[in-house]
Image (cartoon, rainbow, N blue to C red):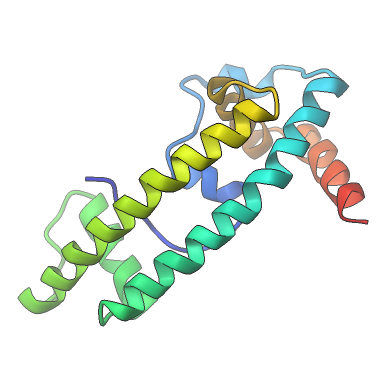
Length: 153
């Protein structure tokens, strides 16, 4: 089962969803201006989908009777492979039920994002590769951030 830490929004959400490149050398690849333009446009389309999904996930956590920080704390402990310490059986049951709902939301968001990515002219693999480069290459990050800022004006 996937564990979801609900926190920051934006491109970083992609890296939390396991969309990191398989090999760090990909991150240092140089991209053409056209590739960066397409990527920035794709990110601009994907971000609202991520933001809406994040709101929906937070709502599910609250409706499930948990606080966001508590949910994230349990998620981190589970993700690290341990049985969460100091968590009641009732809290663990709530966590598991909410996690299933969030997993369903995540499957839906993945489908929407894949459609947007392909509609924008990228492959999901190329998008993942460029997310990794954005996260690890300061020059790439700067170029993409500048293009995103220009799109918002």
